[in-house]
Amino acid sequence: MAEIHEECGVFGVYHVENAAMLEYYGLHSLQHRGQESSGIAVSDGETINSYKGKGLTVDVFQKEKLSAMKGNTAIGHVRYSTAGGQEAENIQPIVSKGHNGCLAVSHNGQIDNDVELRLELENHGAIFQGTGDSEVILHQIQYERGTLLERITQAARKLDGAFSFLVMDEDRIYAVRDRYGIRPLSYAPCRQGYVISSETCAFEVMGIYESYDLKPGEIVEFSKDIVKHYQYTNDISHHMCAMEYIYFARPDSVVEGKNVHTFRKESGAVLARKDQDLHADIVVGVPDSSLSAAIGYAEESGLPFETGLFKNRYVGRTFIQPTQAMRDQSVRMKLSPVESVVSGKSVVMIDDSIVRGTTSRRIVQLLKSAGAKEVHVRIASPVFAYPCFYGVDTSTRAELIGARLNVEEICDYIKADSLRYLEVEDMREVAGQIGLCLACFDGKYVTNLYTHGKELED
Ligand code: AMP
Ligand code: SF4
Image (cartoon, rainbow, N blue to C red; front, side, top):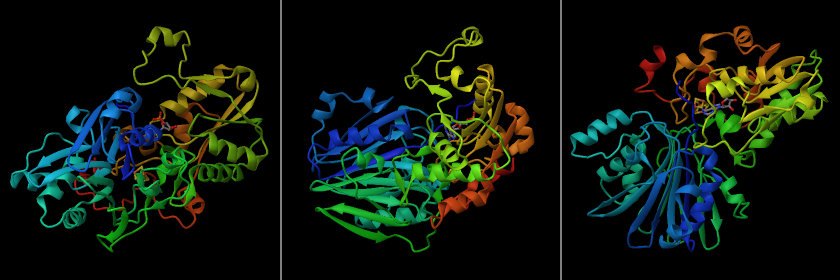
């Protein structure tokens, strides 16, 4: 079965000495958004040099490599392939060197109408190297006429879907956000220049605590040491991806003004308020993404928060997975139950989401095998029943357990003693003033779904 994966992260450095090194730290902080590949493009004011490869940022870049990448403006990318395969051609930033100069693009999201645009561009003579939709952005910008800002404006108006992207030429960076505000993008002053990031956690590691979000439909230009704001459309809405709060973003990030840890804690508290009649002994969160919600549940319910599950953080991409025979002998490399904590206890197990149901089923089994008397599963998000077409790889609808089974049936499948999810309305309550995309929970997609309408019907 196909693995489900996270989306991507973009990071930009404008006018800061030794930009490649700062890029490296920025991308490292965004590594949780994608571990498949990592890339940096640096401009020295005259030309753009790039280096990229498969794997983690720390594996792709060594000190010598970074020192050789001279320049004070850079964009970078960490990715997990959403649109497009895992071929080397699709690794970002994508760089082109044309007669009118160099351009580099880093993109997080998914362009809905990329097939139509690609076809049109090919009919006009564009030659694509890879299969990803990020290359469509680059070609579309090149195809338009006028100044670079005019070309980006025209291109952004034609793109539909969810995107946050950075465009760099020899001496400028443009940051662009989709009109629905689905994917996040923030920027912050840094020394004599600026840094731009998918998530604010990358700023905080640099000691920067003052940052700004791009508005939906906005282009921000970083050039000649100043920041200029342009609105490429006024037809905007506010639909921040709810999964950023639920699962993707780091707890120390602030998304649309709200700290992710706080959001998760509040979600856990809502779950606890619905459990007035439940008699349990301890609260256990599935590490790492569910720990904040578990703390929120514990605080609200008055039950003790316990480390009932331990995660080995060193099980990476290249880790040699145990064979089936070893698994049968209980080789649990990634997640282990803490027997002395859970044995004989009635456990409230908090997880952030159920996608295919395999993880929850496995964890319930782990806790029970360690002697848990009862396992009550509480999910800090609503039933995940629809695929995402906005840059989050959630596999097909058929693979989503919430699309096939009702809550009672899912409870039976994961072998829990009880199961409860948050409602869509609960998510809205926690979000307060922040508008959310909740399409994977309620099926209400905010874009036209050009190429995906059919997939949804199947
Ligand atoms: P499963 O139900 O086994 O498919 O996996 C659910 C778990 O995967 C959740 O507990 C999340 O921590 C994690 N998860 C949720 N969405 C994604 C995603 N798009 N990519 C990777 N992992 C995810
Ligand atoms: Fe996020 Fe779900 Fe909307 Fe996709 S459909 S952008 S995962 S909330």
